[in-house]
Image (tube, rainbow, N blue to C red; front, side, top):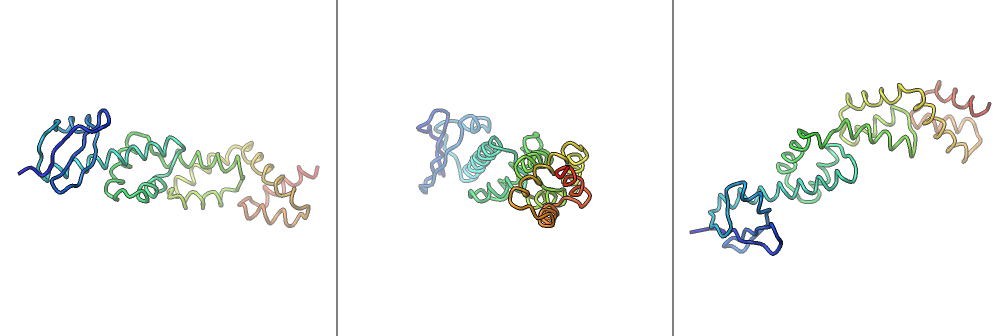
Length: 201
């Protein structure tokens, strides 16, 4: 006896898989056909399970691509969002592995984008940025390499320090407070001294 039936859905290119127990799900007709299934086919429980997993993979991949279209994510960050949306860990792991293999998901690219964004909005020093990257699941080695590259450009460092200092100076003219706040942002004493000398000049 058949456990479920493959039937045409209300939307074009979508098939519904309806089980004898009343449960159902949708899947792309193209995906189902590529797996050897056809419309109005009666399937057993094992085939139903195979199609259901394919449907879940398709849904998770679509959601992952939607999130990546908005901005780059770390593997950890994207995994967390997909798990919160109800996808199982094995489905999420398989989707992320596929996206990584295709170059659509990259912790290095996320780290580079994250550093550019932070330095443009709220400049910080390498130690603070490294901590933020690791909180987002980026491997320490990747974080170190990306930060080393960014901070090796003297113009980058000067612009970041200058912007951070200007923001702080607008709220206080106490030099010790300015130094303390810049130190908390992860800038070195030497860097702070140089930028304050330029500011005072």
